[in-house]
Each structure stands twice: as structure tokens, then as C-alpha cells.
Image: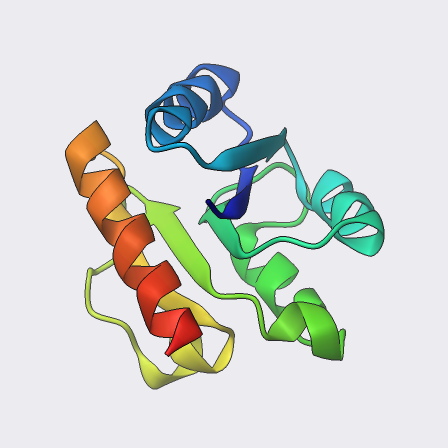
Length: 125
């Protein structure tokens, strides 16, 4: 069972992702913006971050850049959600800990669970 932080400003989507992942027996925490994510990560350990690219104020890329300044947090694998980003990972994204890019317009419970399990498995190898 992994502890997963979902950073998503759309409360309905975040709730949907949480329900899907609770079904897979993961421990899920939700935050809605970059500042809440930083505050949460300052106080808690997580195994995986699910990050929406488009957040209010600081976007997902700005948050990724900031998280790299914390050595312990920089090691946490990230799955990036977007409706407008190519699926292929660039080297730059990988440098920020992004393991997968997921198109949230075609996301399903099965697809999300599969991606999560793959990323967690690769992180422990």
C-alpha cells in the first residue's frame, strides 16, 4: 500500500481519483494547489505524487522546479496529469522526477491503477 499525494485543483476530479485509488488499497491525500502541496510535504512522507499540470497561481511545472530544491522530496516519483501535454516524456521532465505523463481526458480507474502500480514498482527496484 502506497501513500499517494494528489495535487489537483478540480475537487471533483481529485475525489474521483481518490475513490479509484482507495479501491486499490492506497492511502490517499488530496491538496488543491502548490502551496498546500509544499505544506503537506513539509510534514509528511509520501511514496508518489500525482500532479495536475495546470494549477492556480503556481502551475505544476513551477511546483516541480521548487520541489527539486528539497533533496528528500526530489526523490519522490511523480505522475503528471494533463489534457494538453504530449505523452512522451522529455529529458527535462524526467529530471524533475516525472515518471509518466497521463492524459486525463482518457483516464480510467484501470489505467490509473496500472500507471500507479508500474511507477511504484519501478521506484522500489
